[in-house]
Length: 159
Image 1 (cartoon, rainbow, N blue to C red):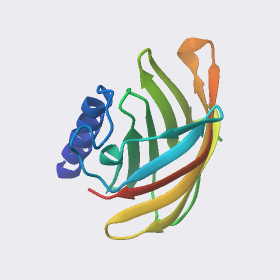
Image 2 (cartoon, rainbow, N blue to C red; image 1 turned 60 degrees about the vertical axis):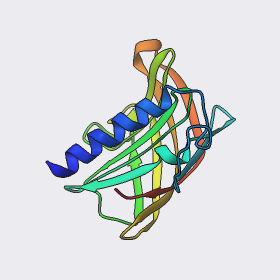
Image 3 (cartoon, rainbow, N blue to C red; image 1 turned 180 degrees about the horizontal axis):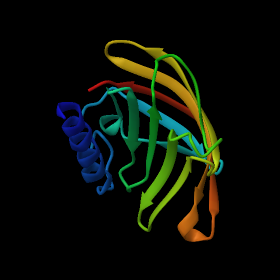
Image 4 (cartoon, rainbow, N blue to C red; image 1 turned 180 degrees about the vertical axis):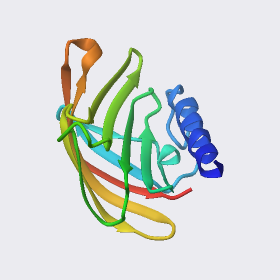
């Protein structure tokens, strides 16, 4: 329950920060994490202060967001450390990768048999999780529109 509360707090802070149109420096924040990708070919980078990872009860959650409300979130269920994990390859696979916006409110996901994706964890230390990812996210609420998230990398401090 303690780790769940940390995860909820982490997501709440990330959402709060994402409502601002400022940089880490403008907000007076410090952060060491990085989460970058290309979204439909356009460079994307989160605020350093919003990047983090939580490992709890065999689940890894990594997230980062921008100052305008865009976010990328990765969840690996039955997490076992360094290795390659798939999303969107079958109905029993609950791993997920998502890209979302808050204006307008929309999310493109790869999970179960929706979309497709790969997450590679390259390092998992006591303080940091590093890796790469790519996925095609589907927004079922918007006529199954898709977003290609490519060249994703993260270096996320654990909380």
